[in-house]
Image 1 (cartoon, rainbow, N blue to C red):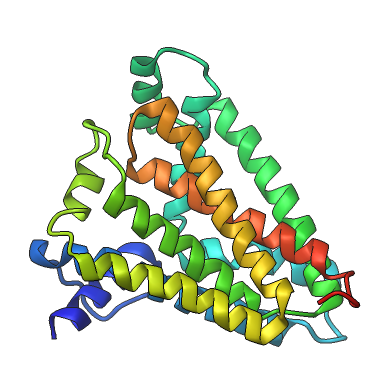
Image 2: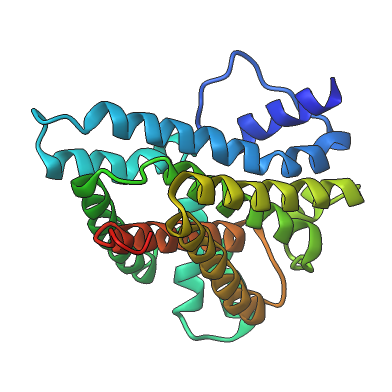
Length: 257
């Protein structure tokens, strides 16, 4: 029962899916975080289902691509996109650590966050357009969301939290060995299923997600000296973009995969 409650807490915390009621138990936060790959799978399933429903001859390709570009952000309740914008604003200020932390907490939308948001949507739209145009390997959208959130959960469990961030510190309490094992199994299992579904193309997409997450997290971890909710959202958004770009680039490859 506690695992179901932890999963339900995760669904309410990390998605914008309407729920009949909300629950919270501080003792279940580790289970809530460990459930993130499952939350990613749900978001990915919705994304994939939307793609299957919209990719029909009577609908304009560009309109379908635009809708599918924003679907994962809507389903996730924009929680990670907010972190991406805040972190971009702080990082690109090129100021002292104290000033970066102040900017990170500032609810005001800065110019750098707007610029980076525009770049994100341009790249994501272009990638989604290429994927929709080909219509191949669409189920890998599920893998992208699952692996990105698995990486995020693992970061909460193993990386040092920023002293200024009570959010991640609270989420990382009562960490158990099996929580970490479950996340690793979820990521490795997703990679295996992706390989069975589309061969080395599936592995390439999963690798791109992991690589994008690791590199982006390494940069912000070094800049801020730890992880916070905003930094996790930043790396998650970038990792999913990397997965989409990899999937888009692989659409034209028909002989190797």
